[in-house]
Image 1 (tube, rainbow, N blue to C red):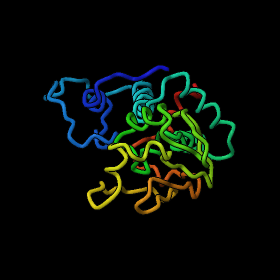
Image 2 (tube, one colour; image 1 turned 90 degrees about the vertical axis):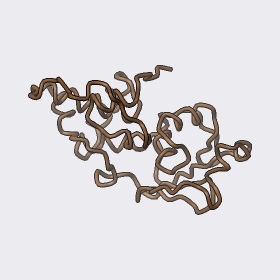
Image 3 (cartoon, one colour; image 1 turned 120 degrees about the vertical axis):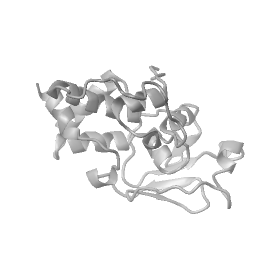
Length: 200
C-alpha cells in the first residue's frame, strides 16, 4: 500500500493550508520564514496545487484520486462537489471525523489494523465508502486498549462532529445519517480548479 511520507508541517506550508486541518494543532515549520517564492502563479499551477492539496489532506495517491474523479463525473451532481463527497465518505476520514482518531493518518492505520466494524462486519480497507445508515464502531476486542479508552469519560477530547454523522455519547460508535454535501466540508478547497485541470 502506497503511503505519503512527506513532513506534515513542510507540506502544509507549501500548499497554504493550516496543520489544524490535518488534525495537528502544534505543528509549525521555521523553514523559509521570509518566503522567497514567486508571488504570481500560472493558472495551471493554481489548479495543480489545489489537486495536490486535496490529495494530501485525504491521504490519497494519484491513481486512486483519478479513479474518484472519474467516478464523480458519472454522478448526477456537480463533479467537484461529488468528488469531495466521495473523499469524505472514505472510512478512514469518517473515523477521523467521528473523533475516533486524532488525525486522518492515524485513522488510516487504525482501519488497516482492523480495529473497526461497519454494520457489525470487520472492515480493514481505509478507502471503503460508507453509505447512509452505516454504523461504524470500534470492535469489542479493541475497546480495552489505552488509545480508545481515553476517548471515553470526562477527560475525553471534545470533537465537533459534522452534521452528516452522529456519534453516540460515551460510546465508540457513530452512524452515517446522510451523505455529505459541500457545506459539510470545512476545508479551504476550490474544487472547480481540479475539475478544470482534469477537463483539459
